[in-house]
Image (cartoon, rainbow, N blue to C red; front, side, top):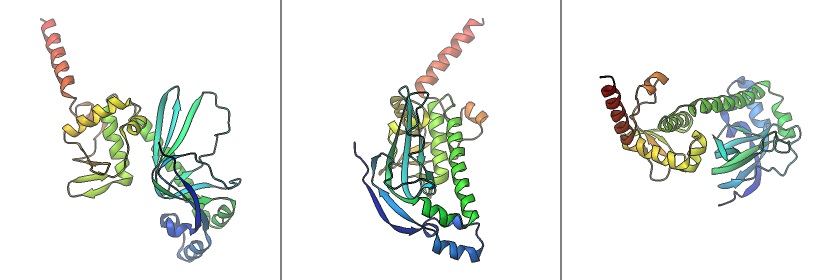
Length: 267
């Protein structure tokens, strides 16, 4: 089990690193904002990360991911959930950690790919505040993260783990997918244990479900981690319930046997 190394780096121009933030600024404002909105940065290597920031963040906004992938994991009574975060996401990993929870819980961060973060402390927040459009964009980013969590919550309510996994992978592909001649690549290195946290299932169940998706030609593992999604994304919930993914062979045999028993019993 590795621990991510943290190092505070040089100052960056936030809007050069994340140009989308400046999308709603008028051209005359944009040039000034690019020059004036600067922040110190930090880099975190792959592995477990405690989420600590050495600097005083009182009055600050948080950490803005400029590059890299992270996973947040939360557990209650031995069961875990998680979310994957990347470029453009806002973090406040220290927020609420000193509060006394009503339920015992554990939290943790893991850096999946080396992360480059902008430290939006009080000085950086003061610079950003000169441009209200930037504040609006940051709030939008925070709300988008909330919407993504709500979508994942809806996904994990699907009864079949194969469907949960397929829907999750297509959801991740919306953001990190890369079109290839043989399908849509999702180059995110997630272990089956991590996938289990994301879809609220056991690790052995996820391994079995991934093998079934591969057998059905819906997913193919990539050599260096990640998956290639084949075919079209999952359809409506009704289509999914009607068999967009075939149940594993042992389930089909059990279903046929049950149908035979039901038919004979009606005689």
